[in-house]
Structure formats: C-alpha cells, structure tokens
Length: 438
Image 1 (cartoon, rainbow, N blue to C red):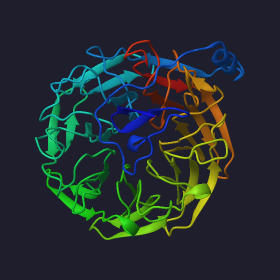
Image 2: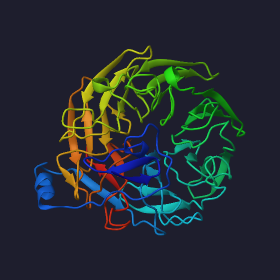
Image 3: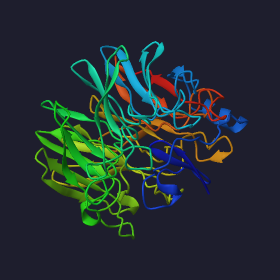
Image 4: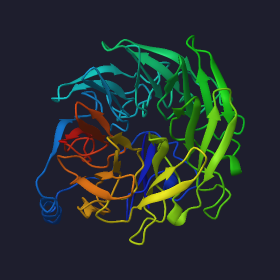
C-alpha cells in the first residue's frame, strides 16, 4: 500500500483511503505535503451522482494551486462580519523546495470572490498551516505545523502561532523552540478571558503532545505533557471551554485496541493544568482514534472517531458519539464503507440542535477515480442519532476528500475539500470551497 502525505493527514491508496500513520502504523503522520489519489467521473460515478436527486450544493471556488492561490485546504473556514477566512496547507512555492508550497491564508466572500492574504515563505514565519483561524478583536490568530526556527524535526522547525490582519499583515506571535515546550501545533486555538489555549501533537516531557497556554504578551506555559498509556497521547484536536474547564481529545493512548498505544481519550483540564481523563475509547463499535474536537449542545459534548484501519462493510469506519462532562459516553451513529460515508475525521457544528459534519471518504458514489471507497460526504445527524447524507462528492469539479468541518454563516453551511475541483495539482485537483443551501 502506498502512503501519500498531505500536511495534517496521511492518505493511502488501496481498498479505501485511510488516514494517519503510514496506513497501519501506530502514530500520526509527520511527513511533508504531497498528493492525493487522482479523481475521476466514470459513467458509474455520474449515474450514482444523478441518483442523489435535486442538488442544493454549490462550489464557490476552485483552487488553482502552486504559485497562484494555494492548494489543499484542510481547515474549517471562519466567518468575520460576513467574510470567510481560511488556510491552505500548501501552495505558492516554498524555500524548502517542495513543489506544493508552504501554504497560504486567504479570504473569500460568500459569493466566491477569493483573495490570498499571505503566502508563507517556509522560514521563521512558519509553514504548513492546517488549523482554522480564530478572530480575536479583529486580528486573526492561527498555527503552522512547522517553521519558526531550526529545531525539532530536522530543519523544519517546531511550529508557530501567528497573527494576520484582514489586509494580510502577518506576524509570528510565538515560535515553539524545542520539543520540551511542545512542537507541531495542528489544532486551532481558543481564547479564554484573554489567554490563548491550544495543543501540540508532539513535544512535551514524553514527546507525546502537550496542552499549553499563551499570555497576551506571548509567554507560553505547558499546562500538561501527555505521558501515554492511560493518560493518552497525540492530541490532534483543539480545546473547548465549558464553564472555565477545558475539554479535548487525544488520538491514541488510554488503553484498548489490542495495543499499548490505545484507542484515544477524552480529557478535561483546568486552566491551571490539572488534567483528568474522563473517557477511554475501547475500539470496535465504541469507536477509536478521535481526530476532532468537541461540540456542545445543551451541556452535552458531541464529536467523531475515525480509526485508520479496519474500515469495511461490517463497520469500523468511524462514529458520531456524545459524552457528558462526567464521562458518560454513547455512540449515536456507526459509519460503514457505504452510502452513509466513512472516516469522519472532522468535528461537528451545531445548527439549531442538529449536527452537521463531513466524512473524508464514502458516500453514494462508490469510487473516486480508480480508487474505491468514495470521495466523501456532507451529512447531518440528530442528537438522537438519525444520520442523513446531504451531498456525496463525485471527485471532479465538485471536489473530493473533505478533511475539514463545516462553518455556518449567513444561514447556510460552508466547507472545503482538500482535493478535486480542477485537473491541476498533479491530476488530483487542488481543492474547493463549497456551500449548501439551507
């Protein structure tokens, strides 16, 4: 099986498109950006697409890639006063010599007018932005996986936290300098009473990831270093704040899954750094490997799991689950390798009590080019567990492989696909921005 790297996630060609460590390894990916398998629109794909009925899906923008406008968006968009802002993991060249580039920050109107605000150069300014932005008093904050210095992963750097204005003025707010204080921040930040909080998926005392805080002056404090085992390891997702307590997930650790690595955890942590694992995933029908952060509806948290191995017609392709702040967990929906989608690596959004999300693969369209498994879906799910596919990607002009979650703005959801849209970027397509009518 061939592994293809793309920023935050590793995609694999084979029976299905899988994510994370080397298609069967025990750790998340650490590779540089690369390509996604080619897409296509065979007669069968077009026939399946036609069966979906009246379309209320619309592509707002198709990325051209390279030095034009960026490529491979992996992060959710944010809405700031009616304008959407996002990042592309690659595109626009790179001092490290990667053809796919170092990434961009862009804005796009709800009518589809796109503008590149900043092109990362791949040095001290950081590179490979795979997290969503946050708006903090009119200034946008984000993270880059690499850059900021020469430490950590060869010459790649440990990652940065940067600010950018609406006009495109970028500044590194904090650069991670060593593995001790965390490295490779993959998730978005949150602002709690003027202090930023986030996670790094590597680094810390055991090199298994951290939770950190960052003061208004840019002073970083490691609140918790994950120790592995029962404590959890590799936090991919960001945090949420519920009444002053932070909650998050780790991709592995906690035990279960037939290995010492474990299936992942849900944890709580105080702003002073007191951490507690409130749930340990058991694998199988319970779910494993949560990549996504949590969403709160009426005091209950909701999210997804997406194991990178074992996805088949019998299940094992991910779950939607709910969990209380005391750790009472319930699986609401189990994805299979079929029309309902598979591998929901992104989190959920709450719109009037109903949850909306994306799956990386699966859907009504049974193949994505010559690779079976489907090009992904947009779906809704009730808090009672009733799931409905709203759109199945065909892998061509409409995009393929949505890695990011959705954003609700102006009465409708918006999202991105990491591939598809055009025939560029090595034939895989450079990605899209899309919307669905309410």
